[in-house]
Image (cartoon, rainbow, N blue to C red; front, side, top):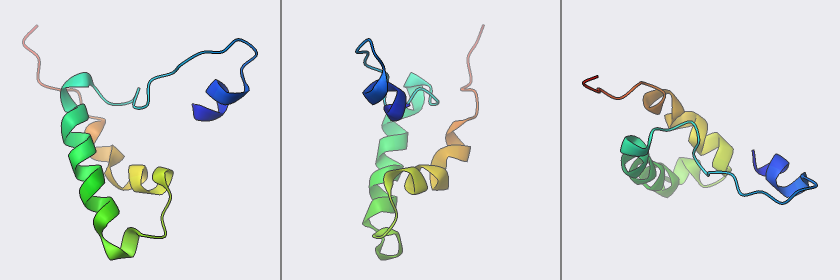
Length: 65
C-alpha cells in the first residue's frame, strides 16, 4: 500500500492499517510494540513484524447487528 501511495500520479494518503478494524487498532499497536522490543525481532522489518501478528487481527469483531 505504501508503494502505491508513494508512486501514484495523484497524491493520496492511504490508511496505515486498512486490514484491521478500528476497534482492534489500539490492541494491534500494543502487540506490535511488544514484538518489536523482543531481541529476536530486532533484525525484522515492519512487514515481517506485521506478519507475526496479522492473523489475530483479521477476525471480524463481535458486533450485534
